Figure 1: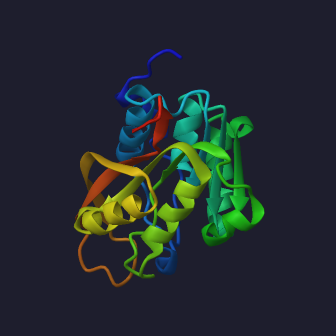
Figure 2: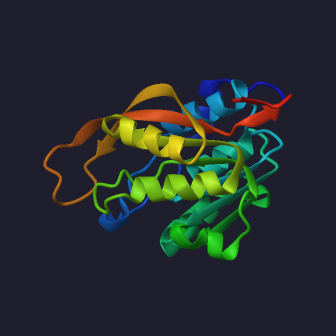
Figure 3: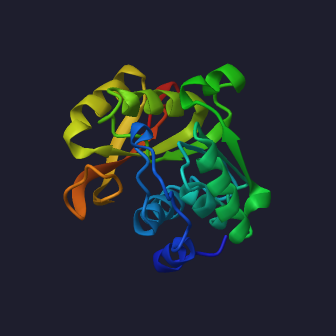
Length: 220
């Protein structure tokens, strides 16, 4: 496909409708157009993991990652979320950007996707999972499910402070984890208990890839 510049992709993802009343128990923080564009642009133009591929977005929220993947030429995108309002929002946003024909948005607890869908059903998974601040271990649960669904790669955001724990789990699951970007995730004041207008959180964009056997040599 023709190259889409990063700024053009970011512009296409701006002004996506977000949650009016985010749910703190689900850690519903909006993925900015800048961060979404960085994730997807890297996945496509560095690793060729989006165009023509089947892409899943776990905890899709407003649908920004699914929509961005569709704009980059993904053959099919599936967004999963446990919140009905997130699914409705994703459908509305995808329709507004004329990519709904490439996308399905599925009401489903991410913990139970494997109960309703065969494993390794997607080429690529992209996600901004919960950081695990409200439900301990939620970040690793999302990661484990993503790895079970993908055949090529998983792109996921994790707090930099958890890097050692995340990469250790990747090794246990037999996948290669590479930090491909260090980003500042700006969390706006979304909830009543927030005392600051926004907080910058250091996050890693990590690409998890699967080993291949070439001439009986294990490679990544």
